[in-house]
Image (cartoon, rainbow over all chains, first blue to last red; front, side, top):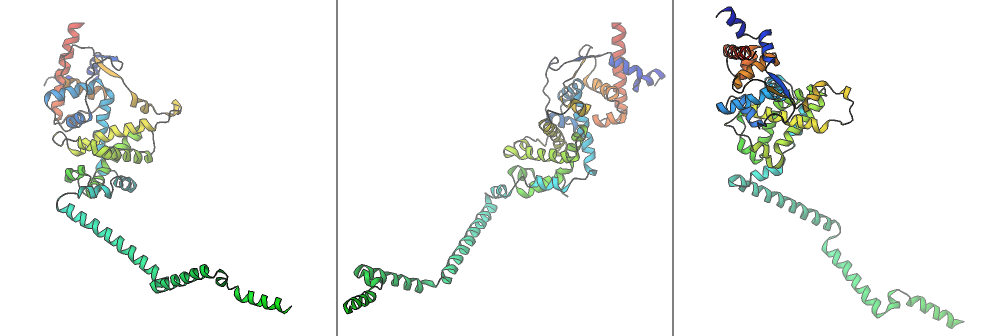
Length: 186
Length: 180
């Protein structure tokens, strides 16, 4: 390689000045819009685009400095990721975004779905059994069926007495008898 | 820790909780690194990076994981795709969170660049430089990157970058000599 070739194969001030002569700034919208989405940028970074699409992305990167900055940031972040610590809070919050409802949904088919439905049935049975135990326990503490019937029978007898003999039901007969006796004595 | 490449994508897309937890553990360093870079560019705190990272995860699983379902493993690795998506989501997050009443002097100059719509137009005939040649000149002169760094970005060796630069210079010299 000659001296001249060497000076032109490496970046230098002359090359910079020459490159600057090629440019004119335009405002947004003046250039033809060429849609380059995130998926294309990712494919370009991994070198998986066709020749035509590679040229399209590279033209986009030359024309849009902010797009090139995004690519450089992304590449640097990929290099940083392995050695950068992540707060536990970030992981815990993100994991909480998908809950158990989703997990049950996944288990809806095949053998997993079968076990999933059995598990659900067992959960419902356990809740039902606990409900029965609580009801039965509370009923037993209250005296059980015999006492409940006894109270019921007494209440029924009092009701019949009240209808047939209202005064007697309120135990006024003795008082009236005493009153009559007293008045009669006068 | 599970690597991103080991994630069962079909289970992840179906909403499996355990796969999601493994995915989050594997992806969090990358997504947080992207968010931290975006946030620091705009002079915001590390706390904001956590919120921005959370927003990325929210976007990934929103609408029945519609964004995740757009991933095509034949076009890019999951890590690269996630990094690109995370950056876009983090920038959107900052746009939404930006205080409209902040004094202009308090906003770092780099933060203004987020709305930058500047377009570089080349005043040379179309086809004078190939897209690759123009990009190499952009990286070397506008971004002042080392040849080795530009080569790494373009997935070629350094000599290829020098050769591309050399051919581009020859074309520009010829063009401006004739034009002048």
